[in-house]
Image (cartoon, rainbow, N blue to C red; front, side, top):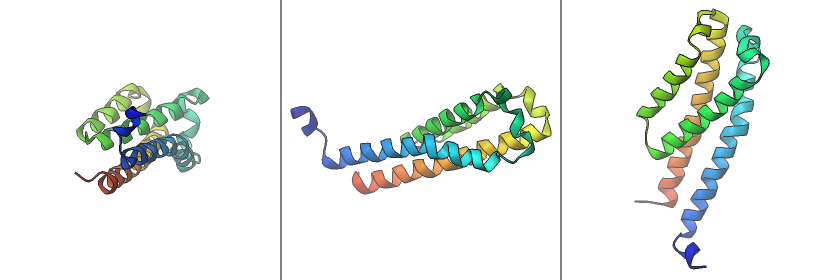
Amino acid sequence: MDELQMFSTNDLVYAAVVALLLSANWWLGRMLVGRAVRDMPGAGLNSGGSGAGARVGSLERLIVFLLIVAGEWGVIGFVIAAKSIARFKELEDKAFTDYYLAGTFTSILFAAASGLLAVWIRGILLPS
């Protein structure tokens, strides 16, 4: 029981909030991004229909969320750059490029919003 006493109630509540926001980033973010790009011309070109792009997007949201919570804003640019380098050859197709950018920006916007919400809640629950 002594192990739990080193955490305050607010610490535990904040941990639950972060877990909830991570889950929302994974599931709700995937649904939101999917709806944002489903009718775009390049939608059928994504990873040959394997769903790999959606999984990469979910991981991207997770990484961006955690980086914002950690206060490492500058590293987000490297995440976007790495994703773009991996898709560089496919970006020659305009339809795919539009689809890719819309999905990436929607994904990052959602992750940033939930990350900022977590930071705001941390400021309320765990003031410095």
